Image (cartoon, rainbow over all chains, first blue to last red; front, top):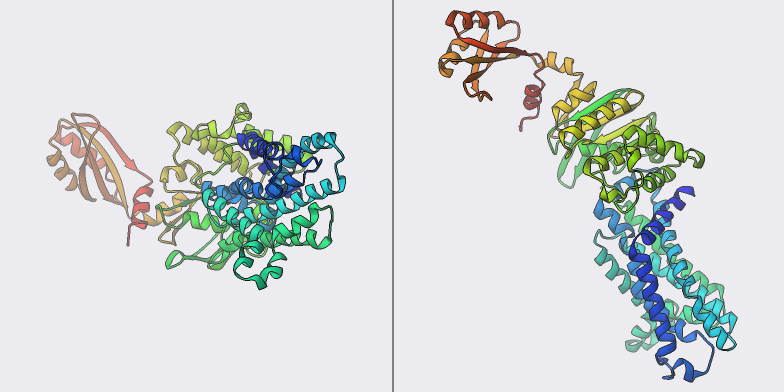
Length: 244
Length: 312
């Protein structure tokens, strides 16, 4: 376990020793703050102050979409860069298994995501000062973001294991995340019968449940399953070097 | 310590290794020698369990590399050919990272990092970002990382490639020091490198082992002829060559380019059993030439290397 921790710490170190972390977090906070306080709600068409409701629901609606753009930027280098620079050879000749590598990299990304989410805490504090905040919905919202973000991270890591090109890894990850986010809406337009089945696969549907403050084990398991499947595929892809 | 049996490796249609067998004893420094593309790096990548062989077996300290890859990796310190490093990290942070992943206990971390840095002469650079170091220092950081867990075995792929002559000498001395209590396999296409650092050499060519032994053993095996270098002044090169070629025991003589403008350098190939130095000297005295140098090349490994690794 100690070596997995070391691998995760190395990734954290990379983010915070370079401008990557600070730019990502700043960008995320600015977008969230501007959207919450200055823009009209995409559903009601009213601004935050016109709505007259101390709620972050509006924010939780839009962050999953922002994540589709930001999380692949966090994950794109995780394995692709190791392959391009050749450092993967060091990794593969250290006494760690491919599972250790995949889990270590995933946890490094997850820690960064958690810090990014922590940085948004001033927003609920401000909103809470303006009126009565539904704490259940707030906790559910953050938990939902962490779970959804984990699934995106695992997908990003998987995409990063398929290529040594970070741009390709980014685009693939964003594409797959967007697909699973919007799958029920997209496909049901042409095939109404599939809506229910696809809703079960959609990130959005499960996320909406959790942000209402209803934490159902099925929704939690849904995301954890996604994480595990993507990590298993990542490990398989690392082991592909043994196929010859 | 390391036992390799009938090792083969194919990349698609290309056979990089065609059945290599050798054994390395504890404490040996073995030079893995061969032209580029001979199979040196492929062998090392298999030994370090970076990639699997196509057939054959490798055991390291009794552990099969396929059955117990993690155990084997613990025993080995590896410096890959391109010396890949996390260039964004500080030297100290990088070594600490490698040591932690390699399972060095927490209370031993500082001690091991310091020992590795001292051994490789990078103690004054521990606070520097790896990306800002010169190539020679990067190589030392790679070496320090390879021995951070105090491994019994070091595998070094072209440890001196791309370094300047001063750095090469430093790295060679370091390798010799490291070899005092470790088993080392290093690869190179550079013969003087092996002569300077190794006590045994394995020559590979086209995926096959073509020679295995100490420098002296290989020399004995191949020295059907010997080479003499003669440096003369004030002679006609062609006349001197013809006269030397006529000496009893001499097979051929060639004029070679000379560094001094008025001197003539000749290379004389003689049969092994004939010591022609006295005869050459008498010839020079008889003709009244000025003799500037006469030297017998004892170790003709370069010729052996060229002979063994000529394209077939």
